Image 1 (cartoon, helix red, strand yellow):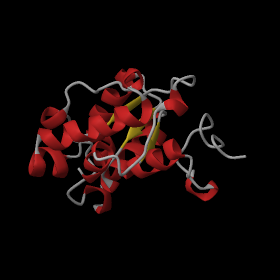
Image 2 (tube, helix red, strand yellow):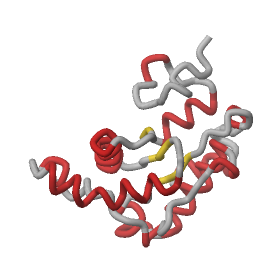
Image 3 (tube, helix red, strand yellow):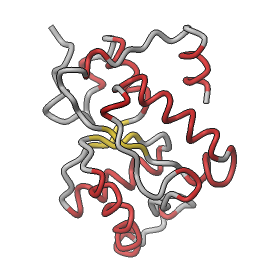
Length: 163
């Protein structure tokens, strides 16, 4: 994962200081295509490294199971576009329950399909979490997240860092 490389090399100056007092909790979705089918647990470990650098190690709650054993969210492989919404949601209930078990306020979803599916599951089943991409959190941690880029943030962060 390039973000991990750039952080390790000092090219991406992120910080978790913004979350020290807030203590907002985050978890991470391991996308099937990225972790289980392509790059393996190394990609998952890199994502965890990045997330901990962004939010603080104490504010990261891992799902169980995780990495290449994590549950599929049910949104990939064309399922989001299949028109089989109820079947997709029924299958995705496993992921919803897994996310809820973490108690995290936010789920980082590196994959667009995972983001759409986990967000839909949150709305459908009434979850108390928000889904965001890494880039949103990276920009937030660097103090450069624009006012118009906050659509998926919850009320706890939607105005954070804005003057």
